[in-house]
Amino acid sequence: MTTVAPAPFVPDATSHAAAAEPPAKMTHRKILEALSGLLLAMFVAMLSGTVVSNALPRIVGDLHGSETSYTWVVTATLLTLTASTPLWGKLSDLVNRKLLMQIAICIYIFGSLFAGLSQSTSFLIACRAVQGVGAGGILALTQVILAAMVSPRERGRYSGYLGAVFAIATISGPLLGGVIVDTSWLGWRWCFYVGVPFAAAALIVLQKTLRLPTIRRDGATVDYLGAALIISGVSLLLIWVSLAGSQFAWGSSESAAMVAGGVLLLALAVLVELKVKEPIIPLGLFRHRTIALATIASLFVGVALYGATIFLSQYFQISRGKTPTASGLLTMPLILGLALSSLVVGRIITRTGNWKRFLVLGTALTAIGFGLLGTLRADTSGILVAVYMAIAGVGVGMTMQNLVLSVQNSVSIRELGSATATVSFFRSLGGAIGVSALGAVLASHVRTDIASGLTRNGLPAPSMEGANSLPNPATLPPVIRTIVETAYGRGTAGVFLIATPLLVLAFVAVLFIRETPLRTSNDDSESNPSTRTDADADADAVVAA
Image (cartoon, rainbow, N blue to C red):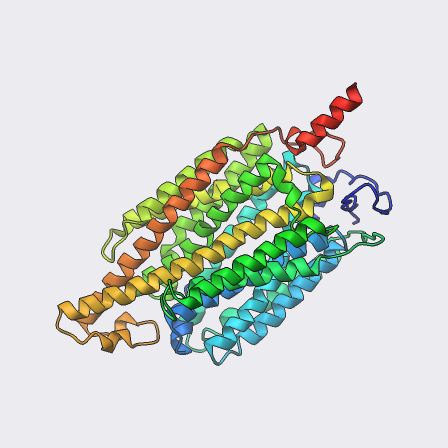
């Protein structure tokens, strides 16, 4: 089966790109055949993060890591995933997308195999960073290729399939990871090996089902300097957020130097992006109201998307003394709410063409759910915790894919890769910032709370404060166990309370997004008011005169 790729990205009228035919309309069956390999690859990328979520306390404990190490095992993946997403998106506008997807999968396999061989948290973090590069390519290219094959009006239906795969990976990942960790003859290293067969299968299926012609453009370039500046600036700021408060004070000279360096690098990146012919992140996209507001909302939703599952798993295992497998089962309300709302809302949008109401309702429910999770304690009723998680999950499911849809509906097919990667970049950036910053806050709160609890009970604070690894409540004396469980319960609640105002800001941003009818084809000749700027209106006035 052969599909016809969209016309290549043309940044200006002077490009010497060969003319290309508009994408041929594909039947539902052909789209599903082409999607099969993409969905399998997406499952692999999601599994890389979810399979370790419940296993992290055991992994970090066995490698004698600290709370900071716990955070960075997650942050390293999010950091490289975030930083590489715009580059993958730009490359998808220039070269063969099938080849890019296969390269991304191979990078993921390489990182996974070496992560399973880790003997220290430092080596594990480095391998997780490599995994993030591959996962970033898989997630970005999946949405780009889907958008190239399906019109915005029909995309909600197929986005539901993405939501279903996301749900399957998110549900099965923690459970699978918990079972692997709790099975003595397997061990936590198989949390990294388990994705390799799926990745290999995705390569085979993609080779057979995805047929995209090679995109060739004379003089095509990639802004590697801009990419390097963006990666360096974001990385420096995230490292500062994760280390400040534990390795050095927030107001120290080290903090000032890292913040100044990160801001300077990002400012230089903006200057480069404004001058180069083909920027990694086309800043002109932000002249469109929908894209600018959706990007802001995506940044804040990223905090909810990544922060919830990571810190809830730690809450159930440390604060409530559950096993990794039980922890995965207890997070089911969050995941089921996300999956069901994503599938149902996707089909409703395809049938009606209305999407903004679901963005507004979704961000509102996410903020409410996080506010309720901010009341968690070690002894909070399990039923209440399940209800709070379900509310947050339904909200995220309504919001996540539809923010991408609103952006894709606002750009021409020529800018599809860059626009999709841009909104994904800011969502992943929000997740990386959220995990780093909220993890630092949680670690600081837990240290302070445990120290004060030990002091109140006449126990020496240094005996616990000096412990470098995450505590295992089952091995602690009853009094100390209660102190530790209480501290982690209160600390997790504080994390959700901090994230709630950010989600309120996302709600406000979504309110001001202008809803435009979803296009019924990927033909750029179809008018879409949301892509028109003031300069376009002036040009039309001149032509009319």
